[in-house]
Amino acid sequence: MEKDAIIQDLFNFSDDIRYVAIYLEENLVYEQRDGNLEGASEGGTDRFEELLVNPTILKLATQRGNIDCGGLRYILIRYGNFFQLIRSIPGGHISICLDKNSDLNQLPNSIFDFLKENYPKLIMRHVPFYKENYPDLL
Image (cartoon, rainbow, N blue to C red; front, side, top):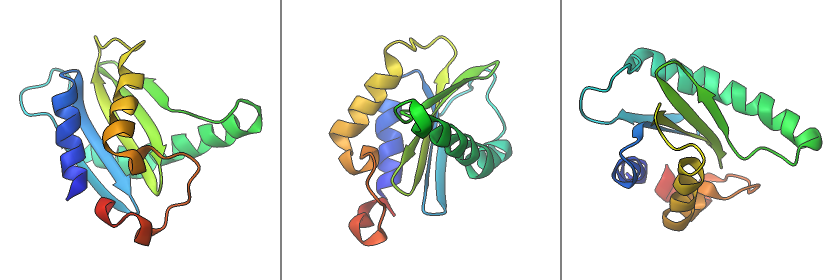
């Protein structure tokens, strides 16, 4: 499944990536980096964050961004133990947990440039999602 490959490629891309979730057409795949991560959240709460919290935050911020802010590129949340980077993708969202010491001036754009280069359908903007157009993502 390509979503698993995307997650592994992101872990290989940067050691600052602690966790990746891809929520696409009601299907959630998420994984935490192997090892003992300081201050990691519990897996059960991660699931609810991806199913409820992040889609709601994205919807609200997208609506606001579309009024007169030029849209929304991504959201960055600073929790006490880490950062959460969230972006809409066709049919859902991608959520990436970053180490609290990450270089936030460079890393978010580097991640999205990496995804755009290696998984262009994942980062397409303003394109309607139709299952038949993205069979490799489902």
